[in-house]
Amino acid sequence: MENNLVETLSMFELPEAGRPPRPSWDEYFMEMAGVVAKRSTCLRRQVGAVLVKDRHILATGYNGAPRGLENCLAIGVCLRQELKIPSGERQEFCRGSHAEQNALTQAAYHGVKISGATLYCTHMPCVTCAKMVINAGITRIVFQNFYPDDLAVQMLNESQIELVLFAGNKSK
Image (cartoon, rainbow, N blue to C red; front, top):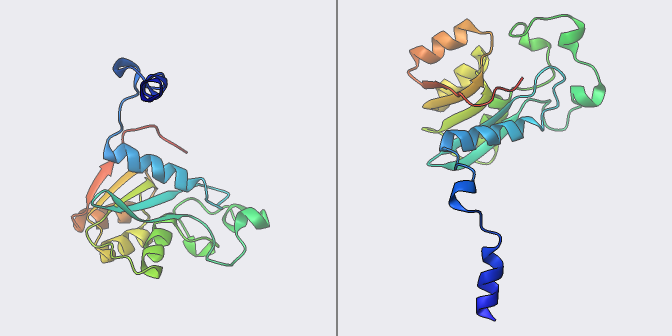
């Protein structure tokens, strides 16, 4: 009986040459950030963030309205689009919080220490998120897409946070 089970299970094994390559840790967590972004309620851009320390996920966040409030997806209107506000400007005209902000606040809400963590994010943080990330003690940011915010880049460079442009598949 035991031999039959081993033979049956071996039918499901992929030969070594046919096995897809194992992802690196950056690939693994960036893919998770992409999955988190799918929960976004923003009509303009879907962004996901994952905070990781010692290869352990501490918190995640996506861009969307604060807890319990109507979001743009549900309302069907983006105020920033209606006012024709360019990306990276006048963020106060948005119902949503950024993915990075939501990951940081989720960690705080649940009492999770994030100092020394890596932030995996589908997009580079804006200046507001950059300031929060710097103050939270994040030491590394891996991002996939640029965000039009020169001051954020300057401040992140000054803070000596390691910035890594992820070279995998680009999302919108």
